[in-house]
Amino acid sequence: MNPYLLPGKYIDFEDPGIAALARQLSHDAASEHALVDRCFRFVRDEIRHSADFKLNPVTCRASEVLRHRTGYCYAKSHLLAALLRANGIPTGLCYQRLSVNDDGVPYCLHGLNAVFLKAHGWYRVDARGNKPGVAAEFCPPTEKLAFPLRDPNERDLPEIWAEPLPIVVEVLERFSTYDQVLANLPDIALIS
Image (tube, rainbow, N blue to C red):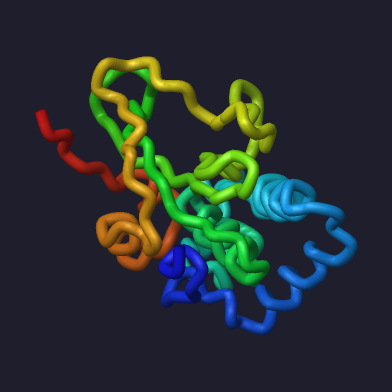
């Protein structure tokens, strides 16, 4: 579990702002469930999704996401991992491969988290941000993610990563505006 508890370049929970927020969210949390739910709801509801709200700058590090209060799904997952790891809860990064327009090509990765809950084991949670047609919740043991798989080439990628995928970081660091990222969303080829 150690890799899922450590800070990193993008999950930088040693940042003073993240450390303070992590303490604030854990204050009086009666259980692990309550703490994870508080952190999840904060990221889902208080951090605006860059494309939904047409917001710049493009963020990648958890501390940037918190400072600017915006991020793509990937960046929001970095912040949720940072808040949970700061509170000693093992948290990883997960990805889905989804159709961008729900009708085949093009495809892109979607970022979310896996949290290790003592009562349930690894549990995926998606703090992307709700909107009409998207209603992600924290309700273990049932997963309620933002996007169901609908297309034969969509996938839930099974890996749980301790650090973000390089292709995701490359896109978030290369482009400076939300619309540039939207036009260049990261994707990976599926192995047959």
